[in-house]
Length: 255
Ligand SMILES: [Zn+2]
Ligand SMILES: [Zn+2]
Image (tube, rainbow, N blue to C red; front, side):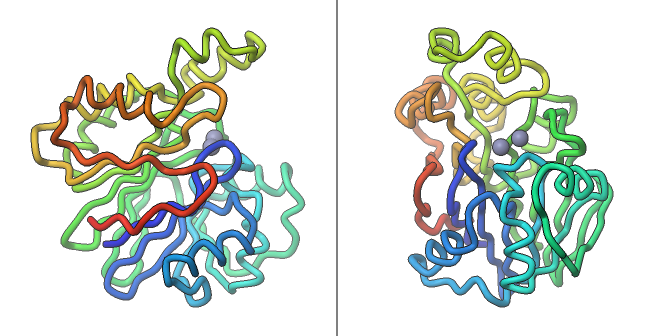
């Protein structure tokens, strides 16, 4: 499996995965042009992608969903509740090829099984994804809310993970964000901190994960070196770490 983060953060999320001829996108939070251009930088063509998976209704994940669907003729896998929230929130336009699923269901795309994991994040019906191509298992778990029951058990089965490491608690506390926003971010429907993500990964037995890609980093309340440092402190030096950029495509991360 090859994974390319095209962008990650509150300014827009989009991730590409391919495995033996199956190609998919997770979330549509950057413009169609950006998604197309950043895939091209890594030698990939956006047309002919097999599926667009939508994690939840927030606009940083859904802003360009309608455009991707129309422009690139992508089937969109989304829950009905998320779809109706997106219709309320954005000017979605006419979309066809909607493939509904229920949070918790598995989706089959040729040899690829996409398991969906309901999350307690404050979207209406959010899910995380575990992609299993029969050889490797990749977790795509951002916008989690809090560390919920079953999360660490799910992590134990993974070969690689894209995981939310949203904020440094001290930076968030000292930031100029209004109190209600600080409380939302660190509350049960917000995001995981560097420390929470690091604790989750440190609970895994040595060597089970090939790599972790730290994702959805806050611009104001985090920095890549702080996120890495928090993970090094708890996970040691063995685990390979990537940080997904808020501005550009990652390298091709191989699972
Ligand atoms: Zn988000
Ligand atoms: Zn969100």
